[in-house]
Image (cartoon, rainbow, N blue to C red; front, side, top):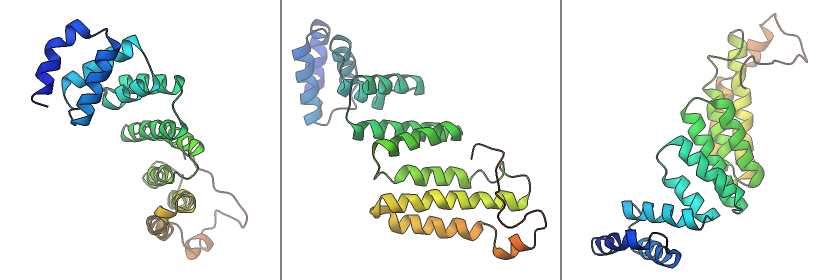
Length: 206
């Protein structure tokens, strides 16, 4: 990297509209694992400007520093026609960003879009289960309803293990934990507010 970067950096301004030169630079930098260099980023942007492709849009989205820029490039990658696995990966990453920002409803939609494109993708269901389990404080009108939210979390975790065998053991631990926190039979039968067959609904994003 120490040898390649100064060499190409000196020639960048002259060649920043040269598709063949830019492509060669990117290939060489990738082979030498120099992809963290500013030169790599500006070369990708330059190539994308003159020859936009799903691959360069995806790469730019992955290295973008702001959420707005990431989403802009990722959406462009989808429009330009990436395969379903990459598309599912984009929606999963979007879900992670929404989740980190506390936008659970948007995160769930993104995660479910990912699983629709890649049915064997179990990790998004575990992410949704985690968000649901962390929403007990804001969901439900009484203590029993708040704990009943764990049943919903367990359902998502169970689905993760069902669609992705590699997650079966992890998902089972989640399910056991959530069901353990959910209302017991004694809690249900001792509560006078509900009758057999009644459905519990939640006044929140869940």
